[in-house]
Image 1 (cartoon, rainbow, N blue to C red):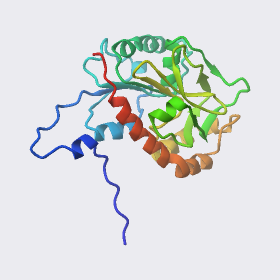
Image 2 (cartoon, helix red, strand yellow):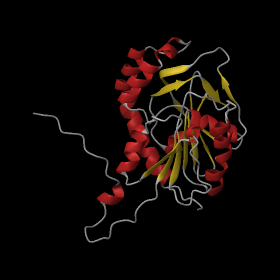
Image 3 (cartoon, one colour):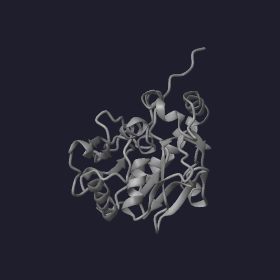
Image 4 (cartoon, helix red, strand yellow):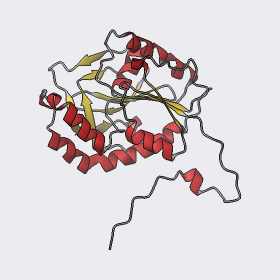
Length: 257
């Protein structure tokens, strides 16, 4: 008997809508802030499109402007990149300063890896390397706090690809911790989240990262390519479940604008 083909994600709101009910209004796009010309929104892009959200990708590193208001957007995702939140590049400074916009308008905001570090910098927290020079590249344990467990079911281990971490910003709530970099996820205010790991990574992205950045897999604490792939086989289904739970909760946040 052949296995069943995977089924697309269908939001509960569509499953429960009667045939005679009108279709929901068109959803506003989600703003994706990327840091490479060829950046791939990965699984988060797939899941948001499945929920009916158009995607608006901006790349400040290429001179593309970020909007002065998010009234025309449903949410914001700021992705990772090879650069540091401590770099002196003008676009880094502008992007960190711009984060005042989603915070003031209380729009759903998600910073991933570099995006979380930039949010932490905006909120006055430090972004630093590990004191012993360790990095996280591969799969590492994750320990949700009580506040984190109320948000979603967290994976046992998650995929990382970074060499810096963030201090917990003043006024933020820690959602998950780790062994090497203690602050792994936090929430600030009603709708701004930062995570150090990569819930957006697809299998193709893991192959690409471990190929193009193979030299970084020899750094202290990094895992070999085979460990990346084994970790994905063991734990990615948990990350996928967490992401669906998180997105539904996150997109249900009531923004001010």
